[in-house]
Image 1 (tube, rainbow, N blue to C red):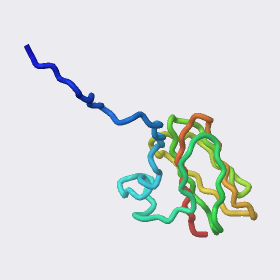
Image 2 (image 1 turned 180 degrees about the horizontal axis):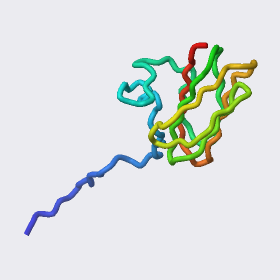
Image 3 (image 1 turned 180 degrees about the vertical axis):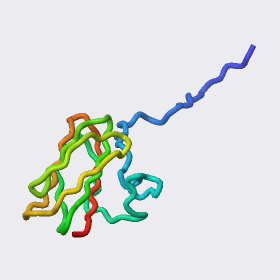
Amino acid sequence: MLPALTGCTPILEAGPSSAPSADYPPNPIDTITDPSSGLFVDFTIDPVLDEAGSGPATFELPEVDGKVAFYVTCSPTAEYRIDVFDSFVSGDCGDVLAAFGMVPVSGESRTVRLSVSDGAMFHIVGIEQGE
């Protein structure tokens, strides 16, 4: 017969429950700074916009000239639309960066409106391009 154990504290497999962390799609910067990617831009970049979130969102850009290239990843796959500078780009986005849209800078407004479905998580990056 085995001896009885007294005063033991159970071992928890995991710590106390906490709010689940957001599972954002990959950062587009990882793709555009990878020389083996078909969307390679440069080894280092200085984005004018780098935001992650969910659902539709609005952002303000700093002063920019020329054009801005926008890169978007989403989870799950979703349609997106970016309205900025009295113009827009749109398409499909997913966990793998597949395309981007470039918008010429015009007008005074620097407001960027990203439209994705309410449940979609996104990561958006804007890179200023020369004239």
